[in-house]
Image (cartoon, rainbow, N blue to C red):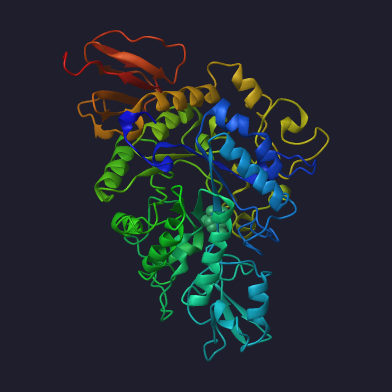
Length: 543
Ligand code: GLC
C-alpha cells in the first residue's frame, strides 16, 4: 500500500480469493482439480484478476466423505491433489508473485480413518482413547445426550466393539477431537507448525467455535421462535434446538490465545481467520480477544441478508458497533457452503454485490467463480454428491462447487474436452467464462478487475473510516470512506428502477457497474436500477 495508509499488515490491505481445489484446474485429466492446476492459474489470480491472497480449501489425505473436511493426515497432500512437492512449488510461486496463501485447518474433527481415531476406537484403554469424545450410553442404551449433528440425526455413534458412543458434530465419519485433552492441543498445534515452517501465511480455521463444548454434556434446550435465527439459512431439524452446549463454550478463548502465540512465534504476519457462525455480535467479537486471539472471526452477516438497503446498512452498523476498536472487520458474500451469490441476490445484482464487498471497511473474501457472476448450478439428483444434501434434501452444496469455467467448449479449460468433470458445468458456461468475459467490457469479470484496481489506487477504500449517508432515496445505500484528505463515496441502488442522488460540486465518477457510464453531471445523478457507483466527491475544502 501507499505510505498514506500506514503500515498495515497484508491481511488488512489485501483481498482474499477462495479456491476450492477440486474445482479450479485439473492437470491430470481426471475431472478433478489439483494443486499443480492452482499453480498454473496463479497468473490469472494475481494479474488478470488482481487479488492479494488465496485461501485453499482442504487438500489433505482424506477419504473425501466430506470432500476433504474429513482429514486423515494433517501433514500431507492427498494423491488426488498432488504431492507435498507440488504444494511447495505452489507456495514458492505464490510468494514469487507477492501473493499470500492461507490453508484450511480442520481442528474440530478428523476422519474416522485418521490413525489417531483408529487407535482411539481400538480399546477403552488405548492411550489415544481420550483424544476423542467417548461416552457411555444412558441406562436405556440411548445416546448420552440430545446433541444433533449439523448434517442431520444424532451427533453420537455407537461403537459395538467398545460399547461406548463417540461424538461427531458433523458426519459419523468425522469424529470430534477432545480439545480438553492437552495432548490433542499439542499434536494439533504441531500440525500448524508443520505448515508454518513450510511458509504458509495463515489458516482458515474450520468451524473454529465447535472445538469447546460444555464439559458436563448438558442437553441443548428446544429452540423457541425468539432463540431461532431468522437471519441465517434454514438448517432443517438442527434448528429445532438451541445450540448452547454443543459448541462455543467460553473455554475456547484460552485455546485461541495459545494458538495465537504459536503463530506469533513466526515472522511475517502469519494470520488466522475462524469460521464462526455466531449471530450474537458480542459473542462473535469475543473471538478477537484483546487482539490476542484470532486475527478475525469470519463475518457471515451479509451472506443471508435480504438484498435491501436498510437490511444491509443495519448489519454493517451492527458490526461496526460490535467490533473492538483495534480489530479489523471482514466481509464474505459467498463460499463453498452457500448458494452462489448471483442466485441468492439475483443475477442483476451481482455487480452491485461486488462493489459492496470490495468497498465496505474490512477484508473482503471473494469465492472463486463469483467474479464471473456464476449462478448456482442445478445438479440433477443422480449427480448430487454432497453428503449434507444426500441426508437432508435441499441443503446440498454441490451447486456452488461446480468447476471454474475458463473457456467456451467441452471441458471449459478446466479439464480435457473428453473428460467428465466431477460436477457438471452450468448451462451458461459457454457464455460465462474467463475467456469470453475478458473481451466483454460489460462482464462481471471486467467489473471485478476494475474494482480491484481502484481499491489499490484509493487508500480510503482500504484504510478509510466508513460513514453512512442519510437523506438518500429509500432503496439507495450510500457511504463515504475517508482517509486523510481522500474521500470516496459509494452509492448502491437496490431498486430495479432509477433513483436520483445529490452530488457535491466537483464530484467525479470513479467507477460504475455500468461500464458505459463514463461521466456524471453536476449537482445530481440518476442511478439506474441495480446500479452501483463509486465517486470522488471532490475537494472537501472547496465545498
Ligand atoms: C465447515 C466447512 C464445511 C464442512 C464442515 C465440516 O462448515 O466449511 O464445508 O462440511 O465445516 O467440516
